[in-house]
Length: 115
Image 1 (spheres, one colour):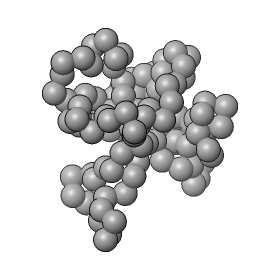
Image 2 (cartoon, rainbow, N blue to C red; image 1 turned 120 degrees about the vertical axis):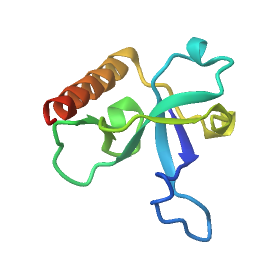
Image 3 (cartoon, rainbow, N blue to C red; image 1 turned 45 degrees about the vertical axis):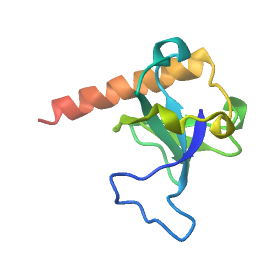
Image 4 (cartoon, rainbow, N blue to C red; image 1 turned 180 degrees about the horizontal axis):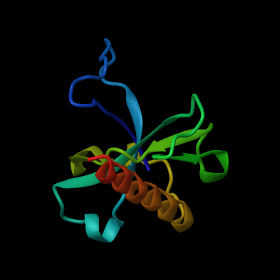
């Protein structure tokens, strides 16, 4: 998990310090990531309300400083060059990653069923 400057297609407010820092959870293994130009990530944000069906909660037991939510509606691809060692925070364990992937799959199924 990395904490990096992240803009959502230019819609995010950028202040004099640049784009906001976001938690980017890489959803492929380091072995598969080697030599790739872009990597898939999901974004985690501070929990501010009740969870919705397309979200997964993480917290202090998972390494975060506070309750955090992963939004399963969006998978972003970012340049691998953004994943610099100084931005690395911690690695989520396999059970948490499985839950995030399950949330992504559930979210995709829900969006598919809405068409």
